[in-house]
Length: 157
Image (cartoon, one colour):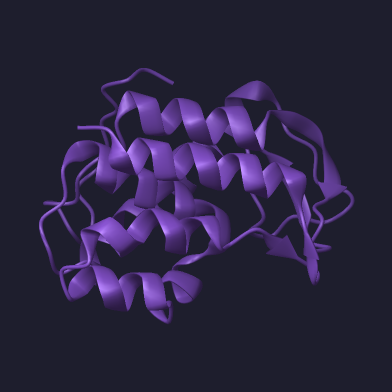
């Protein structure tokens, strides 16, 4: 996917785009899987972490995976833009888009992370990001690494 993505005019034309560091983070931690698999939370997944409508019979091509990633990232970008009420730099924004892409907008919306951030608690965000490392009640080593990468991206100036 080119770093300067373009998109059709959507419901929020002012929505920002995840930066190249954030996109690389998402692709690295999701990985490209052309065959469906169940993630640690038991959800059917394919492509770069795509879950919407996926069953054990869903297969994809690299091109489909890129298209699904674009759509899924657009949703995460729109939700971060809608939910965050304080200014973010590009790295902070991209870290939150990666986080939201992975945990879902509903989890971001109800999180203490979002509440503290919207109260101006920028310095608290890395610790709150790093707390989201459990799936199906178990700490996941891959999520520990991903959250550390998101927290590091958040902290880049």
